[in-house]
Image 1 (tube, rainbow, N blue to C red):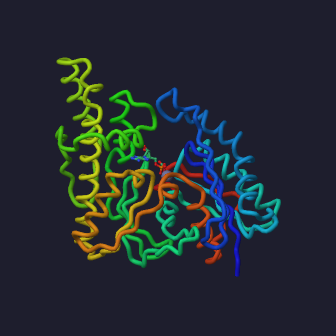
Image 2 (tube, rainbow, N blue to C red):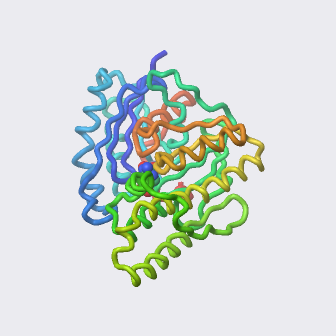
Image 3 (spheres, helix red, strand yellow):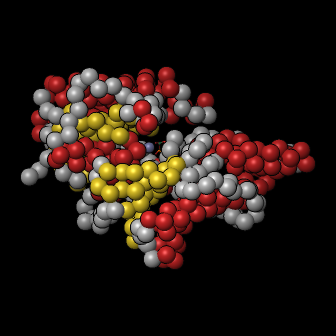
Length: 339
Ligand code: KG4
Ligand code: ZN
């Protein structure tokens, strides 16, 4: 049985649409919004407007690249939250209208659950998927969570950040260094040229499996402020070592709690997901830990780590199989806790 699912993702600053045949990716189109670059961060009003401009061409391209007709679609899945409300409204309103027009089921998807379910996408390589239960370190621009995944929609957050997310830590550190937005990929790039032990930044002492990243931001800020007093070119002269050291600290913080979570739960099937899982330092650390602790590790392709609609469509596919449909009067939510 072939089910064709259209996924629509518009939670932040990427407009994306994807078509799957069951879990197989037929297309995954992403329009990035360049408009935010000059502001050093996402401007919500501009994001909604750009989604409105992008959504029809992006969906048309996804359907065209999948080599199907919109009448072949079995269901439409969209991101209901968490994210920017104005951005979510564009994707969800479009999804609702299209489901009414085509008279096919509408499926709402949680963005963070979808990041995890991206591990079940297939794109032609017959990839091994994680068996339940597994742990997923889910790290994005707004969230940092250790999730115990018992089934497609049975997910328990066993650890989370009490302040900033890991992606925010990357982006804020980059901003302090006057690097362009988004800072995470830039720090990753510069880190490859630097020495990760050149500078030491303190790691938080937070109980249990929770995280904290706001102290790291402050310690980077004060350290650089002091160094710049002595040498105003300090950042420029040391940018590779600074990026390598900052990245190593963030990765070390993430890994310590993940190792603890594996020890406490006895689960050795470990995945990473979300935009920060594109980070080369984190990917390497998971591989090393996999060898050291005999974990079976799951690392998504870069294109399924950062925001994409294929992950929304695969979550939609599993809900479609369970008959979990949304109704027209469900509204987007900005925070996962308010869904
Ligand atoms: O999941 P995502 O694409 O969007 C959200 O749901 O937030 O994650 C975006 C975050 C941003 O903070 C971005 O800087 C970070 O992921 N990111 C990275 C890398 N690629 C994206 N952080 C570190 N290294 C990367 N290569
Ligand atoms: Zn995301």
